Image (cartoon, rainbow, N blue to C red):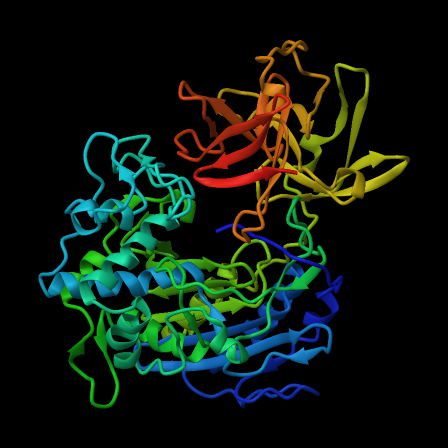
Length: 577
């Protein structure tokens, strides 16, 4: 799910997080409340709190809730930072956070229960369960397994496209590659509703929340629970790249009940869920010992590494809604979740028997995965009675790896130039006799956000040479502007079909998951938001080529005076601005 933003509140968070405000139990607005360190992990708490404060400063995070758990249950719950930026109010204990795609693992456990009951076969075609679903496989019907492993080769479009005749078609055979697709899990939620004959929220409560004692957790995001939900924030402008210290605005309340991201929970309740994962599906606690939420075979299927998923890191695999990889030689189960104004991370060290859940009340770039990972390493060291892991190095927003690689004067075909200056591990654009800082962008390894209004709408993209794209920097692009490095040896004349120039422009929807798309023509090809190249296909679509197999696409329609008024983005519809 994409980062999105609404209307304005220009508040800087850096100084607010720097106080390291921590609450465990009831929060004190005037100061800090923290219990005396006790228990098997107490010697790591001070180091963890210091790292959380550092991470919040660096990432411009308003507030964070964090839970540590092991096989015996919840070991620590802390709340850090602020909930209300305008009034500088501390984040209160026990607030609900939207956990986003971590919800998928709850839905997956419901599916594993139905499998245990003989009511669900993941290898049957999804259309046998849901005949109305508009998915066409590449060479055979798409199965529930394909959807659960994000391997159906479908784009991540809306569950119900506005055109009733529209159908999604896979671009490759199922299992060919991993491509994250929320839409597939939304369909699986409707399947559970059909089989259980009740709303998904009711199924989640009876099958998961109640047995685990997750009494505060809700299975749908709605306005009735709004007073219990933490105040949250999103970027001020959603028509451009967002820097870490960009202005934030309070997020608007949303209503969401689909299975791909419908759960809101507290850190303490999520600790009970961590305990279940650590105990491999067995429910621990008074009156529960020996009772299983899902069979051993079902849990094994749930956590089996079904498909390679490098999106979750080098060497990572994906199970049924959990990523599986190695952390320091230990098997790790993890997932992240992003909503319009919340971001979460869940991690379990399956070998050491410890887990962490972190959630922040903003959608600030990456998920709080670094916090969860460091918490696992600290807890494992405590269990092993070994030295605590090294304190993580600072990660400043403007730090650029190999900054000198990008330095130089780039020239355009019209004689204009672009001068880039490297100063240690910092990079600057020389603009109007001033040095404009460049911040690495999430959109591409070689993309940077120029912190100046004249360059706000696009990231500055550099292109490297070499067959692997790892060679010297050869070109630079910003929007429709193209510049060559001094060592560039290629053509300086670019040609494209005449009609492509009509497709360029700014398209928008007020759907908070999508926002704006800008299409530009640069160096003879079309680009999505100036960073992702578009590849034309025989059917008139243009496929996004941030990955060579991506099934995401653009199309254009409803031409007026030669220009398309509508852009179709994998089934979403945006209107020309």
